[in-house]
Length: 358
Image (tube, rainbow, N blue to C red; front, side):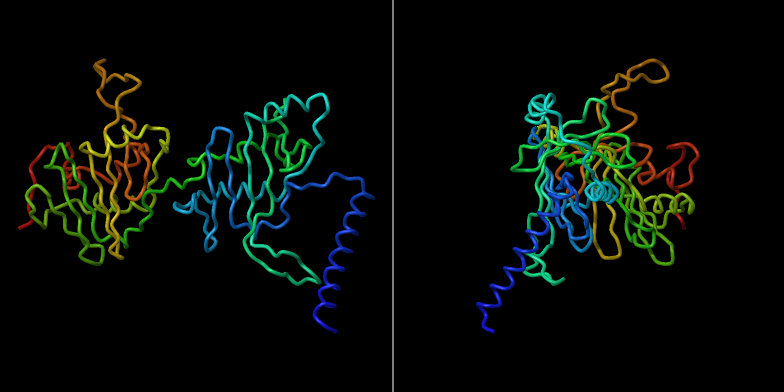
């Protein structure tokens, strides 16, 4: 049997299979659910863009999801999206009476979703042929229904609108298909176990006498150095130092500020930080975070009724290798940037001068 005959047989079988599936669908009289993904393990990329021109790409590499091929994504959020794609169902077509209204709404409020999978061009007798990363599905996610228990969606190149839902979920799905970069970005800044930290530098730019470095000398022993006089072997409170280093296991920023104008971003970068934190791990990788006082936008007063000049709850932060300003809460970052006097065991901030270990 020559190659030409083999190809003819293969494509004939494919055509017969497609015809049988088509006939079965017509006989069943059910609505074909083109939105669902029966196996999400092959998904390698999800691209979303909305009518406000926000866009985001979720990319899987070595079983880890990234946002825009750069920063790690929030795994829990990606899992929720994948489960939505796996279990989404069609409730009913949009009624003729409501059709024009929803078309108008989707023209201004919808998100285009593109699914890319590592999939074959076709499968025959259980064998995948020409497997590669390819776009397998494109659809539009529109607004919720009036009762907020369904979501209007449509496939690309189709005029049919459907109300979709998730069995067991009493709500709408639009927010799960967010094209906002910040909704997917992992907020983790530091995730370092104490044993991996070999150097910590905390610099108070307006109070240099409170700046210091901590260096590991092995077996959870450390040298504490005051940056202002560069003298080593300071006598410190061991528990306080260990608590500060242990806090680096899980430090997250609060909010991504992706709408700040470029000139304000540039201005912040050239200004003097309130505190600079730099950490070096055992792999000799250093990460630096610069913290800046934030204006008191809420006009919050102090205990005497005087307006405080800065926000006492959160700061601005710039993180190494990250091109956005974020907010950092004091109650989180205070744990990794204690002033030197605190580490020396002083009960009152600034109560005594440095004590040197003789």
